[in-house]
Length: 333
Ligand code: TRP
Image (cartoon, rainbow, N blue to C red; front, side, top):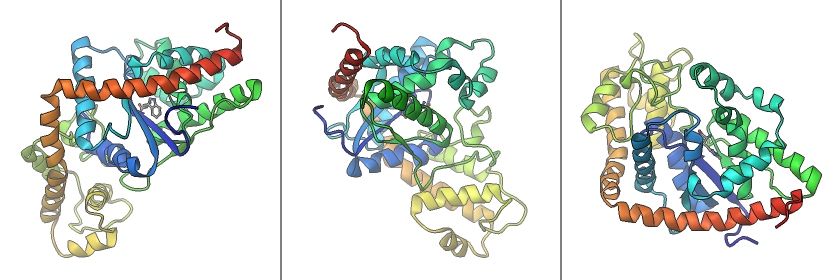
């Protein structure tokens, strides 16, 4: 049995590909932080996934360290929650290869993210991009994780993970726990401030569309003031009012107020007042994170200490699973 109890285990990961946005924070990071109280969590920076798209080495290294520091700043506490770096635990690469041999070409061809990305990166449709969901399946299965919080775009990959795990279990007997995608209730979907029918994304060509977690108060205020709304001048949650709905969603996620409460709070007030207020609560929510980030990023020794101890815990669990898998498949140990 592993050194960490795997009951109630939650596993999740993000890629270190640039500064996360307010959308990532409200949709994922904040939920991770809360989950530390309720679940047996293990979190990971999925740096192996990131090289499916070509990276500049210096920028990549910087992104990894910054992402790590940012998660610490948001409240991931590595004294109780291992938060490790995928490439430091070789079991991830190892299990991915083995599981590749239990995953069908047809299954991977149907993954919508693969289809999207092979259009987006048409000049580099590499095998890693194709096998990406198998690497992710390995991440989850190594830790016998039951709950896997992911955005809607990753749900199909968790379902594939279940299929692969089930197939392996059918051949070799119970080995893997079948994970469940866990889509958080609140703040799950923050949309672009400029095109509110699209998800807020750091790869948006228009920087006014997203709030980066480290944006300064001035910038945050400016971006909210420029946010696209409509000509009704009424703060009301209603179909077709995508811009206003999105701002209300953000305000609600941060303040905990219901949509009705927000409607009455801004009854008779214009969008100017509303947008300023939304910007203010976002600024105050991010302020302590930005301050802590500054401390952590200037303390690289502390960051290393956090990931090294997390890597060690992850490695111990993951190596045990790989050993079990190898033994079942018939390798000589
Ligand atoms: N593919 C996920 C993303 O880009 C990140 C990820 C990698 C992940 N491995 C995982 C998420 C395992 C959950 C579980 O968002």
